[in-house]
Length: 149
Image (tube, rainbow, N blue to C red; front, side):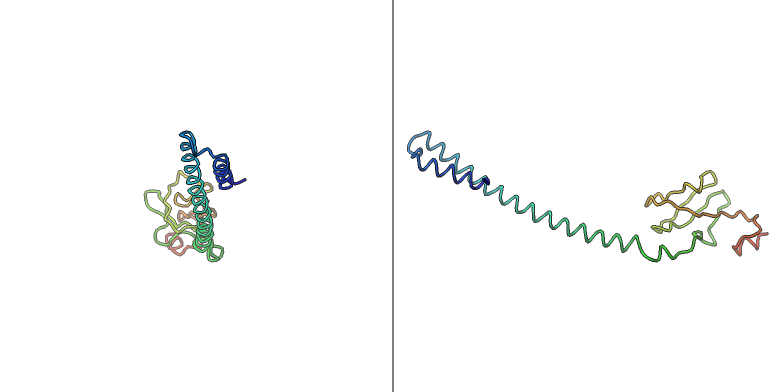
């Protein structure tokens, strides 16, 4: 039995037994009215809760689609492995900066950091295939590096 059915059953029993004629019967009658009101409120809350759950599921699906559009594009797969800007690859103080391939945020790091373990602080994506050229390599593709040799 549901809450509504139980409340209606109790109210029917009280009326059937004629309990409402005494002082105790009035108290029981008021308690049964209270139970009836509470069941109506509970049903309304359950209906609102169900509606909100459905709405949240729709929002979650929409957010998932937006996240997919923003973070998982085909362009991410097509980008070159070269992440460094030509002009700002190396700072004289030993600091490097590059753009995160996943979120586009600028990542700064120094020589002490293991580049195989580099993780973007903004999105948490692991950044790999980093090649740092100090200007002393023979087979470098960077034009500025060739000019320095």
